[in-house]
Length: 434
Image (cartoon, rainbow, N blue to C red; front, side):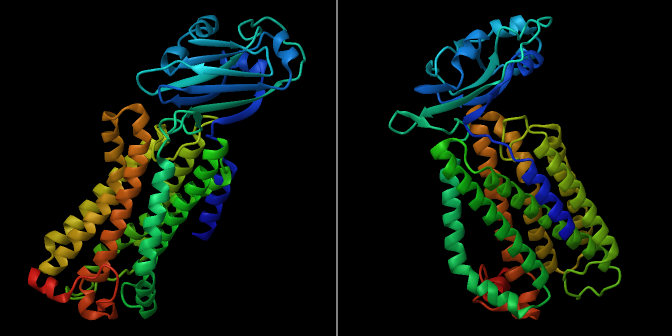
């Protein structure tokens, strides 16, 4: 597992890209010809007071090449079917690059609108013309939305606005919860007991999610100032989230398969502890490898110049990943149904049902929220999916913590029954329930 995690780290960090809206680079005539307009970036303006600032280092060369920027409202499917001349003629705005710095105001729209920025010059549609061996044009482009005062100073695209505040509130909630529950949880882990390994994995996953949120906040805080952010922090945020996903999957699959295998060789009164067998370990590792591969494929399938949370990607890899989560939820449902249908103890059935709730919430929240997001406007979907998935998975963690600390048989047979533990329900309430 350590080798796999090291490989994931290297691949994610090597694949870091900017999704920021301070864009620097080179205008390339050859790339513009091959792509029928060199793609520069995409940005969603909020509807009013939008601004695009273009800065060039070699204006005479840009003038000689008749360089220009083309602005298209989001129309990917239509542009792909057009030839070069038709595509360029469809641009809503064409900006001739004839000055060192040019400020272009985006016209007001009734709703947030996504705009694509492409580069073209005199050689773009002339397939037979020889492109002179001039150096490529270096550029810097800044894209702004209006801030709360109405001034065009906000680097965040409309679909990203608000995520910075969300991560701040999430970190604040993590900090408050850690202040309240860290010491009791540490004492519970030191005492050991049948559920020690599960509690350790849950704590690790929660810590990884906290690290991911912290890295995302640092990246977005820097991004709000310069429109670029810290790409290493953005990549680390995705990496920690990936590790938490595969760790949780490994634990859940190992538990369910292990419980199934142990029922034929253990008495009904035996503890529900985590017992790994070669078969359960093989199933869990297989699931981790498949999910890890899809997560990496999803990262590498991002369009060049784009960098989003992998909660909202719509690539083939992302769809396969959501399908995998649905399949895993059905697999766990089948295993848990077999256990519950033959379980005679009401207390144990309640344990398995609560465990199923936490599992299904973890696996199904992403596909369900992704489908539900279709009813929202385009500028709201990323925020709905990202915030919804993070909150649902955090709630799933709370459910599982509560289950393994207070609602299993272990309040009767282990040292984890102390009422001082976090999220613990009193014995009186549990006995009254049954």
